[in-house]
Image 1 (cartoon, one colour):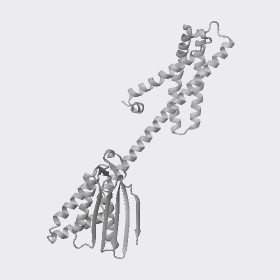
Image 2: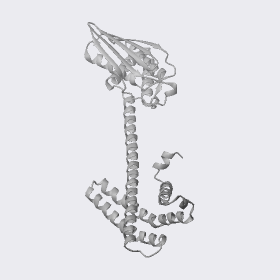
Image 3: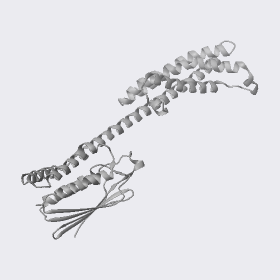
Image 4: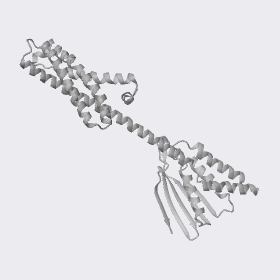
Length: 344
């Protein structure tokens, strides 16, 4: 299991192990800092380490009593932005920890120092109690910060996942979206050809069927082979050419190496469909549309020359391409760059 998954896991067994992993290094550190030899020879005296271990046993319970109630109550106050309440919780737990540590300091001093507890030892008890209470409060704040960081990270990861799902849904809608005006006109064109027993009717039906099948079913992946996108574009051009009465003439030229390249599906087809639909709706026909596609190393370049009598328009567009080794990378179907349109 990965360390990141272990840290972020919400399973009870993983949570218990996380707490154990946290407390063992802290207890080790607390024990080592409790070893306070006054001379070099004290390092070789058994009682030096016994006193440190007894110090750990005396004050460790306070750490638990402060850390866990503090984190639970403080989280509630922080989430609700009750900052005065948070300050009150901090003061109450610090005071409570001080009282408990003062009592435990008496036990510790009586055990490690011979003689009765006098006024000097009373002040020492206050010092020891205060020092260990500060450690408890610091540790509580650290654990609260770690917990908040974990919650924040999980929330951000969830937000990113939601954003990706939304983007994927948007991409799916973009892929499936065929301009309705173009679709209805194509269907009407097929109906007209069928009524006149035109020999091209069967090919028109097959071309439109392939385009719709590709749009609805075959382009569910985020990337598709460039060869498939270009093949469906050729079906689109062939469908348009089948309309003998049309005043819109399209010529397609494809160059470059299409193999081992991937593109977001339907981006080129929808671009051409939008262009055709806008031309038919503009009333500028008859028009000659020359489409030049060139597959470069990292981009698909489209140059579109439209000649509608005196109105000449040139547009240039690029879409990002992924190589075969990067086929799992995510490309936004709306990533259209370097779009330039000019009129003469």
